[in-house]
Structures are given as structure tokens and as C-alpha cells.
Image: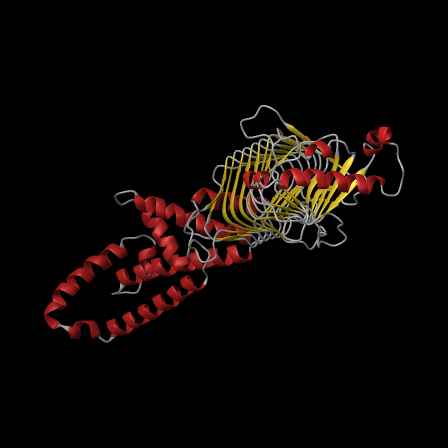
Length: 499
């Protein structure tokens, strides 16, 4: 007496460790073929399909083919083996007889399903091998209108067309809903009418690597709340909006991409980030984004190289831990960097100048002055790298030392007070002859130098007559320093309060 498969509600013979060929574990193709598991699987699957299709109705044999073409078969808890289309027992021939296939909680070892005329839906399935995406039709009454729902891909997922192919895919529906990717997902040379991801709101999607190459997205692309190891986007046209909100992306490279509609990366954390030769036609938002490593272990600055912004760009409250390179961007409107944090060390002068100009243009003088000071510091560093002394170097050094290019009030105020104190004690020392009592053999040299300096100071007309008699040169130096510090103090106050 033959045993019955121990799987729930299965009436097939248990030939393989208490299970039938549909529900038993599968190995590699050669092993399963030699053990006759593949031929048994074909026969058992045929019986299952016929039983589900005709168990409750008596249909003449000559009409069954036409009836099957109108049937959608539910295949649940089945472990599908690998296959070879040359086999006489290739079970895909059974699939071709049907209108649709609903794969439910099944394990799939074949690598693709190129049956565009048959409606498909995969639910809670595990894909063991690399999976290739072909054009598909979805079962009409599926609420999410998505091909894969809650599925796990243990190996790579890629489009059926490679990067060097001349053909293109045409995909009309969503592809993934709340799926798990253990390896990379790569899509090449396709036209996507709808968002490839149709995840539920609270689902956190994890993708080790996502590659989008030479595609066209007519609908939107949403990766919200995703954790992506590597994101590479090349040669793409996004006609719909692109959302990367609240994501964590370790490595991002975007090249030769045209964003025709809104782009929003609100509150996303980018570790490595580089974008080049791309165009934003509409609003682009990077508000509260974090770029680079917080611990500064990676030193690559954030680059927007030859990127064109044709509309408003928002970097409000963004943080650039590794610095920013905005030198080679093309801007039609001034970007918003309000309350942004930018690492000074790894940012060039032109970037600070662009940000300063953006605040100047909208009348935000306080923020503009902040970036003016940073711009001048970078300029000073550039001059320092050049050999030799120059008046420009001296002026920049003095400006930075006295008031940090007009951004510090307390430093010039402190210098004003200290200069006055020193001058006061100089007067006391002169009136009480303290200087001459220090080392009397030097007195005649001191008197000689003082007379020359005083004579020079008196010759500055008409200012000389206002100098303290006997201390004309010291008084002149004091006034020059005091007025310089006062001017820097007034400039700093003005820049902190200017409207």
C-alpha cells in the first residue's frame, strides 16, 4: 500500500521521504533528473492542475483544452525544481495551457518565466537562483497589481536584457511589494510605466545593491524608508517624481540622469555620494539630509559635478560631514542652504562663494557674512600655498586675526581694551621715568630712538599736534591700532545686525 504525502491536504503518493514530488525538497537539475524526480513532478503537477480545474465539473475531454485557457490555477506550497526546456517532461508546457498562475508560498528554482500571454502573480515565494525579469501580465483581480508580493530573492534579480542589449523591456505594472533582496537588483534598458516598488507605508526595504542603467521611468520611483548598500543610476530619464525619503544609502553614484519631475530625498542619510552630468528640471529637495560619515572615517567630499539645477533646490538643515564640492554646478535659481552644516576642511572656496551669493540674493546678510568669512579663509589658504610675501597675504592675515573677517565682535573689542590698558601704563611709565630706570646704560640709545620717532610723528600734519608731548610716536601707534580695532568692531557689529 502506497503512502500518502504528509503535506496538508495532499492526496498524492509520497515517493520522497514521506512527501510527493511537488512538496519534497529539490536538489540540482542533474540529481533530480537522475532520480526521476523531474518526470514525477511533471505528472503530479498535471494531476494537480486537472484536479483543481475539473474536480467539481464534468467537462468532456475534447473541451478541456479550451476550458484550461480560461483558468487561473492556484499553486500553493510547491517546491518547483530547475528545468531544461528540451525535456519531454518540462512542466512549463503545462503552464502554457492556462490563462494564469498564482504561485503562493512556493520555492522556485527555475530562473525566469517568459510567458507574456499568461497572467502571473507570486505571493510569499522564495527564489533560490538568479531571477530574470521578462515582460509580464498580472492576474486582473490582484489588489496591489504587483507581480511579486512578500517574496524573498536569495540570489540576484535582473532584467532579462543586459546593459549591452539593443532591445528594451516594456513593463506596465508594479513589480515588487514588500520583498526581500539578499543580493543585488539590476534593471537594464527598460521602460517602466509604473513605480517598480509598491511597498506598504511602514515597510523598511533592504537592498544590498540597486543598479538602474539606461532605463526610462514614465511613472514615479519611490524608495522611501529603504536601506540600500549601493545605489548606481546611469543614463536614466525619470519623467515622474523620484522619492528617496528617509533612506539610508551607503554608496550613491548618479551619472547622466535627467529628473523631469520632482526629486525629494528628505531626511536621507548618504554615506558616499557623487552625482555628475545630471539635470534637475523641477524642484529638488535634500532637506535634512546627511552626507558623509559622522566620524569622518571616509574623507571623500560630496560632489555635484556638472549638475544643472533648472528650478529651486533645497538643502535646508542638510549636513555635509565630509565637505561639499558645488564648484561645477549650473544654477538657474539660488539654492537654499539655511542652517546647513558643512565641513570646512574638505570644501573649496567656490562652494562657499556660491552659498554666500545665494544668501546675498535673498537678503539674508547674516548667513551671507558667515559664508563670506569661510570664503576668505579658503582664499587665504590658497595664497599661503604660493611662495613669497605680498600685501594681500598680510591684509588677509590681519583681517582673520583681528575679527575673523568681520564675523567676531569680541576679538576686536578685547584688543581695543588691551591697547588702551597698555597705552595707559606707557604714560605712567613715561611720567615716572620707569623705562629709564630699568637699565640706565641704554638710556641714551632709547632717548635717541624716541627723538627720531617723535620727530617723525610730529611731521604728520595736521595729526601731529594732537599727540602727547614727549610720546608722539607711541601715541601715534596707539591711535592707529585703536582705530583699526574700532573699525573691525563696527564692521562686525554691522554684519551681525544688518538688515
